[in-house]
Image (tube, rainbow, N blue to C red):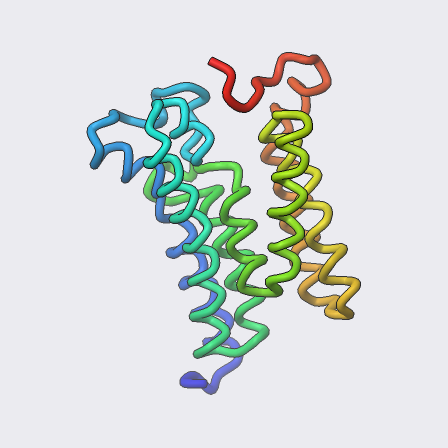
Length: 200
């Protein structure tokens, strides 16, 4: 641990987490690839699902990986240099950084990949559970949003089963926030108008 002051540790964790989480990989990668402004395509979201609507599967995969790893990196940096408490705070900050990036006037994505990334760094079985449930639900129902909503509930439950209530609480908080970011998707799911995976 390189910082002795607890207040400074937590403050640094917030900054590190937010700055890592706020990198808009979808916007950056689509511009570099010449695919235009992602915010003017499809749903306007900056995540991998909307990148997929450009028809560039490789670009969508790169966005997914970037949004995932920025959460993982933020937590691991905080944990390595600032301690486990700071890692929990960095996880929340990275997630919020993706949702509210300063570079995009605080209008970001919905946080699914970043949720998975911070879960991977905090407690990898929770991330594995998330990924497994997402894949199963996506294969069964072909709704990306529904798959993410169901999978997000599983992660804090897995962490709680391990006995780590602090990690479970953080993942639970992120789950509630994830459901809030998907409120429009939930409304469309209930109305039967939500787009399916692979639909034109």
